[in-house]
Image 1 (cartoon, rainbow, N blue to C red):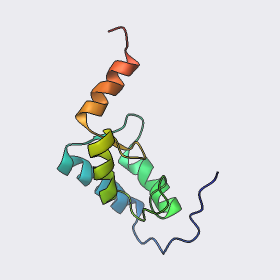
Image 2 (cartoon, one colour):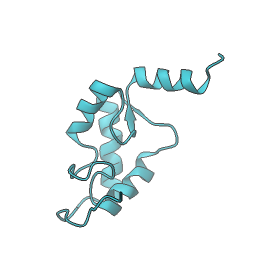
Image 3 (cartoon, one colour):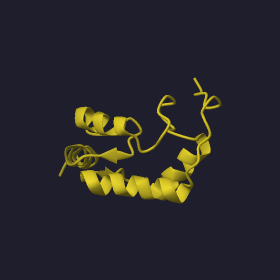
Image 4 (tube, one colour):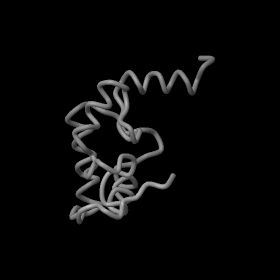
Length: 98
């Protein structure tokens, strides 16, 4: 099912501002950006859909709810941010014989 983002309020941040926010949240909370994703590429998606691309009710990315998700699951719902434990799990999963 395709998510409907048409009813969102106007989104006023630029991609550069969103990328800076993503970088800052990761730095402040000691989080990792998932492999294959960059703050800049993710910011382009956020600006295009005018908020969180994964959770339509979340009007900003990064959002405060992401920190709660990471605390519970090790990663946010978008899989953009991850904590150390999740990254260790991911590394083991990708290299099972090592």
